[in-house]
Structures are given as structure tokens and as C-alpha cells.
Amino acid sequence: FKGSTYAALGLATLTAAADLPPRWELAAPDGWLKSPWVLRNAGLPGIEVPLNEHGDVRVSYRLPRSSFISVSANDVLAGKAPRDLFDGAWVLIGATAFGVGDSVPTPLGGLVAGVEVHAQFISALLDNRLPATPRAAPWLLAIYSLAGVATLLLFTLRRGRLTVYGLPVAGLLLAVLAFALHALFVLRANLWIVWIDAALFCFLASVLLAVVEHARMRFERERVFENLSSYLPAPVAREVALVAPSGRIDARRCEITVLVADLRNFSAYCELRPPEEAAALLHAFFSRAVRIVERHGGLVEGFQGDAIIAIWNAPTPSRQQVQQAFAAAHEMLQDVPALFPDPPPPGLELLALGVGIETGAALVGSVGPAMRRHHTALGDTVTVAVRLQSMTADLAQPLLVGPGAAAQLPKEALVSLGEFLLEGLKRTYTVFALPPRGDAA
Image (cartoon, rainbow, N blue to C red):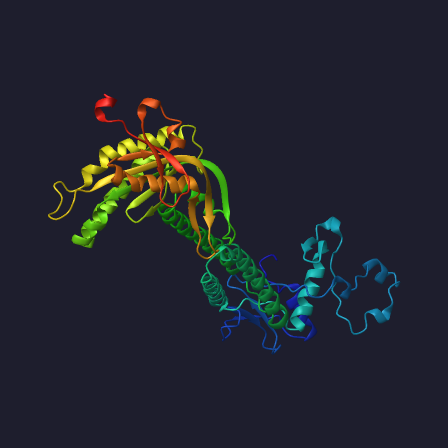
């Protein structure tokens, strides 16, 4: 004031009470749990005012406002205030009228007289409970943040949906723990450490790890679905992937068209040729047959040895199922023989393709225990198609069609070969074949 420096009210009160000159010196205390700077007075040993790196002091508001008694100056001057109220008491005299602008917000109230702030400061200084920010605060925050991230990383070892949802909860708990440590340090050791950065870091780290874990799970789920789709038809794989494993029969009865295509003489081929060569031929056959079936709206239900079983109208509905299966069989008979070695290896007959087609009711779905399910099509329709395919070699026909499928095809597209008792069945079936090339022309 007017070129002179005066001690703050709280410091001046202490030196005046001890009848000491207001000479406070700035010092850097030793110890990582000490504040960067303190104010000391040689006449007041044991009393220090902790300052942060900016030279500011934090005021403790641990005492409630009811701990201080406010008395009007008019009552004192008029002798209305009891004298014993001032015996042995520290009295601060100041302008407290709100009209003079001496009001500040504090944690204890929105409008508090400025002199009350000094009262809080003096009481905290005498009780040695002024909050101090230690030099080691950045290190403590760093250690807590690293420990929090390490905890979250350990949490990610248990991969799964629980981890994705549990990581943000764990991050929130770490943030709450940081605030709890802040309160504990302040109340027990008067150490003021701003934990908000560490709390926010742990929470954001948990959210980031949850996002990464979710992305990893999505990637793995897509990879599993892609692999599942390579063993099952894509619509079937999609249905299976969205339901929990069950040990019950999960199938439905529907009208389907079944196509069975088999490589004739392939067993002898495998006996005399290297397994790598046989596998390459079988792989080429399966690959081309699958493309043909899917191009004509069908689904390859499975592979049995050197044969494929394809179905139409399950699970994807099809209005032209018989016509589509018939067209797929024609394309197979034209394209697949190009894969066979011509001439055949010495001592082997020429490989050939035999196809059987039938339409009728069947049960399509999954059977077997929950730990090992099998998706299949069951019923007489499937059996008839399999038996027709096996008869192609005996009747020297590349394609045989059952009565159910023949009824839905043009009459000129097929010729009847008569009634046959199929192997393993009790009633006869009319078998149809492609007309001779001359008749078809």
C-alpha cells in the first residue's frame, strides 16, 4: 500500500500475537512430500505456510461456519456484546458488509465475508492443516496412472463380452478410487494432489481398451463366421451363429429339390494315384460344382466322399427349384468333365460324373448333441436322389431324375426308363433320364 508491503491478515495476526516483527522468509523445504516453497518466521518455529510453484496458498475449509462467531461492531461499541465472549479469543476486525464488496464464494457458502476466509486460514495454520501439494505429486499421479493401466490390461486377459462391458466400469472405479485417495490424503496428511488427470486418464484408457477389445471381438467373430460359412451354407451359418448351441433337434419340414453329383471311378483313381493328385482333382471338382450350384440359386448342403449334395428351397425359398437344379446338373455335365485327365492314367477307366435329382418333402436342420452339431437334410427325397445317382453307372446315364422332379419339368426334357426298385427302399419309382441326343435334336 503506497509503496509499502504488508503481511496478509492471517500472517500479521500470528506475528502480532507473538509480538514479533512480520518478517516471513521464503524457503525450499527438503523432502518429496513437502511443498515446493514455504514461508517461515524465525520467531514461530514449527509453523510453515506451504506454497505451490506459483506462490499460492490453499485455504482449508474443514471447520464449519458455525465454528466462528460474528459480532456486529455497533453492538461492541454500544456495550451490548457480552464481555466474556472476547476473553481468550482471537478477534478479527474487518468490514463485512456485503455492500462494500467484501464477499467471496467458498465451499461453505456462495456469499461469505472476506474476513471469514482469513479466520479459516488462521485456524488451519495454527492446527497445521493447510493443504500442500508435494513435489512428488506428478510422480504419484504417473505411478497411479500406470498401475491403473496395468490393472486394465490384466482385465483384458479374460477376453469376451464381459471384458468389453467391464472395462469402462473398471475405469470408472479407478477414477472413483483416485478421488477417494484425494480425500484420504487431504484429511489424513494435508496433501493436496490433483487426481483429476489420473482419474480421467484411467477412464479414457478403459474406454480405449474396450473399443480395441470390441474391435478384436468383431474381427474374430467375422473370421469365425467366414470359416463357418466355408463349412456350411452362408444362410445356415448365419442362423447357427445367432443362436446358442442346443442339444435338441432344430429342423423344419419343407419341400426341397435335392441334387447329388458323384465322381464315378474315383475310388480306383485314388488307389493308383498319389493322394496329393487325388486331392487336387477333388478340390477342383468341389470348387467348380459349388460355383455352379450357387449360380443357379442352390446351396451345397455337404460333401460325402467324392460326392456333393445340393438342395434348393431351404433355407432360401425358391419358386423354380426344380428348373434351377436341372439347369445346374446340365452345366455340371458340360463343365466338370474338362477337369478329368484325358486320356486317363494307364490302368484306369475314364472318370465320369453321375447326377441324381429328386423333389419332395424333407426335414432340414441341425441334429446331434450341443457340443457337436450336424446340419443335414433327411427324408425319402434325399435317399431317392442318392440312389438315382448310384444307378447312373449301371444304366449308363449321366443324369437320372425321380418322379417328383420329373413332374415339374417339360415332358420333352426327359424320357422314362420304367419302374425300378431302388436299393434299400420298399416301393418302386419311375426313373427318368435325358433323351438321346438324336431325339433331343
